[in-house]
Image (cartoon, rainbow, N blue to C red):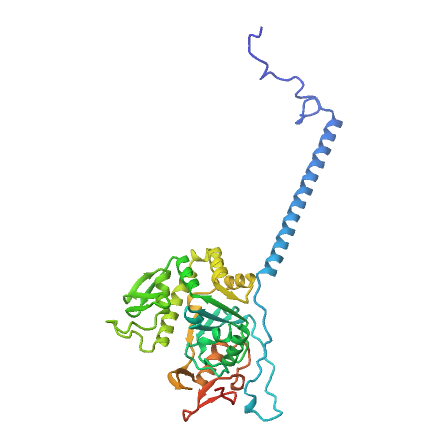
Length: 388
């Protein structure tokens, strides 16, 4: 029987020997210790080799992912950059006006059309240029009543989509007449998309400029809002940007003296508020929600990768980097038997070259096909022919 407990704590007589302290196990011979050292070295070598292989695999996968990302998320392709003159009837026979145009680095052009409920008209027409190098986004509204020099019977700008059979090639041709060059890409937005976007970002605080009191049973559209600073959800925001005039019997009167032109000013002010809200940190993370809205309500020639690329570029902007303008026109004109807007040519060319032109060279009159008036007030076309 043990009187003093177990043997834990007893000294092992073999723990030390005359040669040295054995850290592996008491009593090892020099040969055994050398073999253990070799085994440890081999293990460490294999371990290092595994780490190198693992790191190499991670680097290869990361490189492959980056290449895939770069091939998927990319800017839109640029069409033929050289504008051809449309004013062929204004030049002498044998004269060549087509010159070499140099594209500005990192500059992309687009058109955004807001499709309304009524007859599918595009009452919101925007053309823009995004300079991703200098981080500037310029957007110009084209008034819906702008008179175009086109062969179709309905000659206002808001018919360029519906009255061309929803043919975007014809739409792009009409935009080229106005701009002097082919746009890079287009986006057609259903008005419901606007409402969804505003709700997704949690609504927008906005100073409603006038009392709005309007009902349209045909379009199932109503807006009843008092003027003043307030928080707008998607439905109310849509009412604000669609509103043009009050009901005939409204106690608030007509509201907008210039109808569509005043509405454009409100739209631009509201878009600035939306952009500022979208650029906030919280909403910059809602990529999936925005992507779903685009998938359901937007028609475009952009790929998903193009839109993702634009989204990343957009997040580099500040609110003050985005500029809204309106095409310079005589907004209360009358021509071809209809009330319309007539382009002021010189001011329009200045606006194109200062804010929209994607080329280093200036766009000239001969590249346009627009209706305008001369110094005597006579209507004429820069192409030399008016389509009745």
